[in-house]
Image 1 (spheres, rainbow, N blue to C red):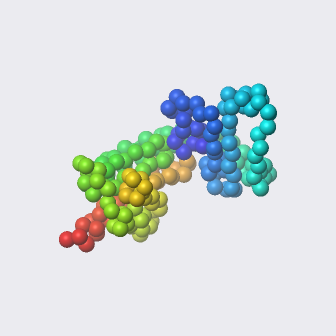
Image 2: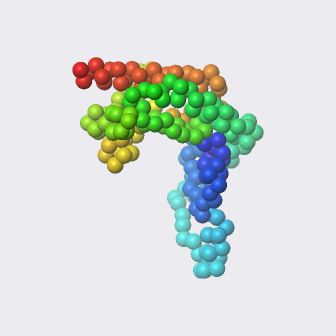
Image 3: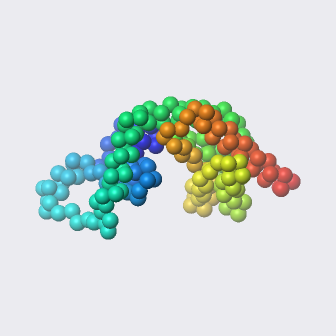
Length: 202
């Protein structure tokens, strides 16, 4: 719902899904809300069949959550936040790559808009991941907290067990100065973490 610079991430890939679930960005974190969008092709099949679609949630149609989601979407449109996501995302991409692409333990930097991931590897050439016992993703996350930034950790992305990364997802209304802070602080945290790890292994 805007995180990649388009309201729907699939718009940039020229793909039209049959079913799309939406949440998180829908209500901007102000209220728990989610939804489902169904392509007219799916609706047509249901209409030509029994016409029944058995579904329901305990809090479906909750008026406070729906009101929050509607207001968030209005603000995104009114304040041109998708344009800001694209512009600041492009800057974040270039700064992360400038500061970390040559780091020997950064295997990849990938993302779109204001949704970026840093993959960590033992060997840049082979992309060999660290063993889970090293705890790289959580270690980078903890170092980030010491530097004043939250880097969301994830593991198991190579084979369900090995593979470390962190995610960055700044606010849609972030400024250029804040993007520069995010990129510098992220690079500082990653660099310091691996310097400490290297010293421990010597």
